[in-house]
Length: 162
View 1 (tube, rainbow, N blue to C red):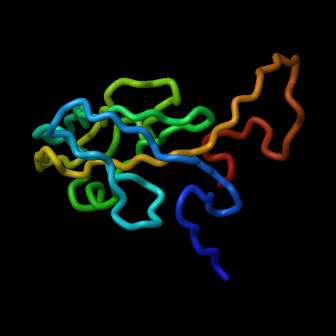
View 2: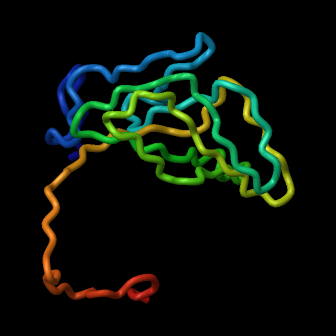
View 3: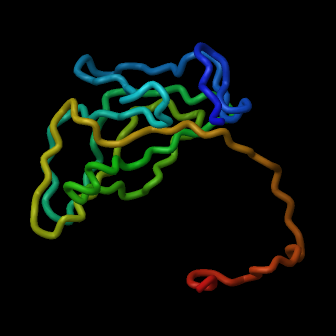
């Protein structure tokens, strides 16, 4: 039986990625749209374009959101593409996923890429262009070693699993 998500500051499921309290967001521009969830239990918060832009075929652009966010210590924000934009228009993120560290306080910008070879894509201010997911991170100390412990995969890289 699937667990139901508690309300309020309770964590779901089993205290995984438990952020207590609200996510602090600063509106840097009065026209900025604050992040939203399409549905109550969605993992991602929709991020919105602040400005109109046209991306020609193959062109990339850094699109302003007009907001800054305060990622809680011990977490990171992953900026992910929206599947509908990718499917219908070939819009991807140049650096997917984008990473927002907890200490960053500047404007969130989205690096969009138009992968369509023929059609330009118009981004309108107020349009959902990406999504933000918070993830708990670990930050272990680094230890330099002379060699790594062996594994079944070893040094097998790209294409090594078939």
